[in-house]
Each structure stands twice: as structure tokens, then as C-alpha cells.
Image 1 (tube, rainbow, N blue to C red):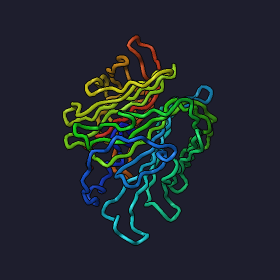
Image 2: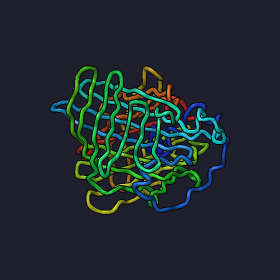
Image 3: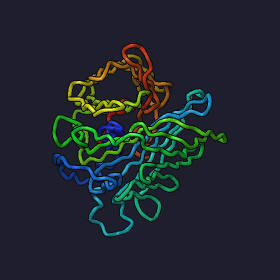
Image 4: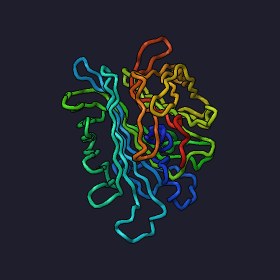
Length: 362
């Protein structure tokens, strides 16, 4: 999902972009129907789907430069504003584009993050419908064949990374149709590109690091919002060291119970197994309280899946992002380790937790 999205989410999952503060009031409330099962078409479906309410492209990963280790995440969100769709003015904000970026400096024990927002148009913000080509001022994510490049310069840090596909595309859910709730209308189209070979540079302040590592890309789009009982979600996307890929998520109610859960496991060689409802269980082990939001986040979990019982552990506790200037939410999203039932670290990836600072309002 992501998201910071919802992903779509759970990245992501229902879309985090769908939880934009204030946008729900601008929407007309067009009823969301169950999405049909259909064959996704590429490269077309790498591009935007502006007829859908919410969409995001989400890249997370880890990279090394000598003895230094980093996590990174970048997300582009697109949100359709229903109330402006009939307006003829070129200034009407029919589509909004948001973006988040962050670097986790493991040895420095610090998270660097930034955000952007603009209405689509005027060569300021755009999301191509024919390919993965996203722009938000000086930030961009573009694809050419099996290679994707992100360039996101911020004031205190910057990412300039190239991601090369090493495995086939992974369709999440039922051939790319991923349920996110008890009702069929609570669903999204969702695919992933795990095990992306990553190279390029990260800059923190005046210091630039040439890095290499692995990344994970999610793309999700949906017309539906969260189930009324859901206040947020927990999600992981993990690249395992042996080449496998693990996704797991749950939508959570105010009492911490699962409204819905799902995910998948694909071995390095073989077909993916899609988890059925009830096969994924998140159990909190250790919490960290944010000095900014006072939210209490589980930064270590026991995760039960059909693939194995895992421990998911944050590499540093403070990876909370304050996106109130764009999507309106405070959430936790950060580099984490995956440890198997034998106590061996078997992979790394990202953990995303939303709805802990306050319930998501759609």
C-alpha cells in the first residue's frame, strides 16, 4: 500500500493520498463501485489513471556507501478533485500532485524528509497517462524500458537514483486487483516491482554518497476510501536476501483489530502465493513514542504469514514523517529489518504505519 500511500496501502494498501485533509470536503461523493477484474496493460498501466480518485507511485529501499547505510523512500501521489471536474477554467485544480521524499541515515540516527504539492498543469506538475513520467517542480520519477530514475533535490538532502528491474512484475491480489476491506468496492489495482537493483547518489547537507542497494516500487490506484471502521493501516514491503519478496498489510480499527489483511510471498524462482484474509497477523512487541506527535508506534512486530513467522524491527525508532503541509497526515515510514523464525536476518525493506497520530479522515 502506500502510500504515504495506501498506499494503497499498504505502500501501500489503501492510499495514503486518499486521506488528504480537506479533500474529502471538496469531493462530490461520487459512489464507488466494486472494481472489475481486468488484465493490466504495460507500459500503459505504469502511467496515471486520472479517472480514479487516488493513486500513488511508491519507491522504498536501502543502499550502502562503504560503511554507511541508508534507507530511502519517495512517493508521488495523484488525487482527483471531484468538485472541479466540470469547471472549464485552466486554473481549476482538477488533479493535485503531491510528493514525499526521505532518507534514513542509519549511522547518523536521523531521518531527513521533505514534501511538495501543486495542482497539475502549467508545466509545474504532471503525471503522464502513457508511461511512468511524473513531475512536481524539480522532482521527477521517469521510466525507460526496465529502468526507472528518480531525481528529488531538497534543501537539506537529495536523491538521484536509478532502479533496474531484475525480476518480473508482481501483480498483487487477484491478478492485480487487491481487496482492502470487507466490501468488494474497497479495492485497488496494485502491482509491485521488488528486488530493483539500485545505484546513484544520496546527498545529506554538503556530503554526497555514491550508493548501491535494492529497492521496491509499488503502484496503486483506487476509487474507494477506507472502510468506515478503519482508522489506519500497517504495511511492509520486504526484499529478502535470497531474492524473495514479501508483502503484508492490515487495515486497523480504533481498538487495534484487523478490519482486513492480506499480502503475498514470491520466492526468487517460482510463483507468488497471495495471502487470504486471516492469514496475516501483526502483533506489536515494542513501541516508541514520538516527541513531535505524542503518537505511540509499534517499532517492532511479530508478523505471522503463511511463509513464516517473522520479526519486523525498525533500524532506528524515529522515522516519523510530518506531511501536514501536503497530504495532511503524520505517519511512520522507515527502514526495517526482517528476521525469520530462527532469529536470522533474512531481508530488509520498509514498514509503514498510519492512523496512530490521529485517525485518517477521508
